[in-house]
Image (tube, rainbow, N blue to C red; front, side, top):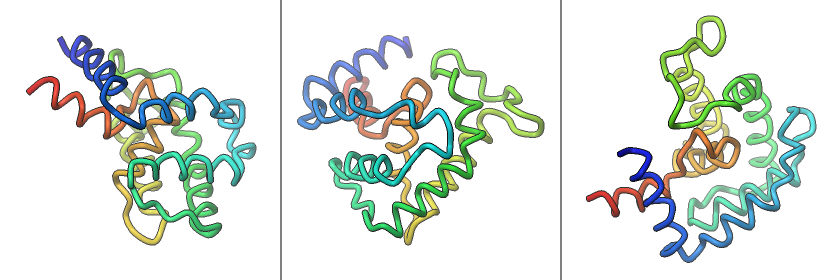
Length: 153
């Protein structure tokens, strides 16, 4: 049931979201190889990421200072991001120990909090989108949840 609802919500997103094509273009053009090692993620990629999430009016500041802060935050949680790389929403066990002393759910929370609090203001909406682009199989983007809610109600 959950899987069917997610599929319906995803299809609806692509049918009704005017920025859906931009989402597809961003993910298709993302330089995924840079995200394999923390030291290869660069400010150009971070700027593209901020421009992408701001298409949904997140108002994420896009200055060099903010870009550097976001890059530093992502690099600081990179071991957790790597450990979650193989996880997906339908098969994940959130209670499983991902690494000693850290369950999957705790790792996601630590990633979210570090990225959300790295700028001038706490940025929850932008952070959900950022983490979704890093691991779209595990983290559902906020926009997708809104459309899923509309389908299921």
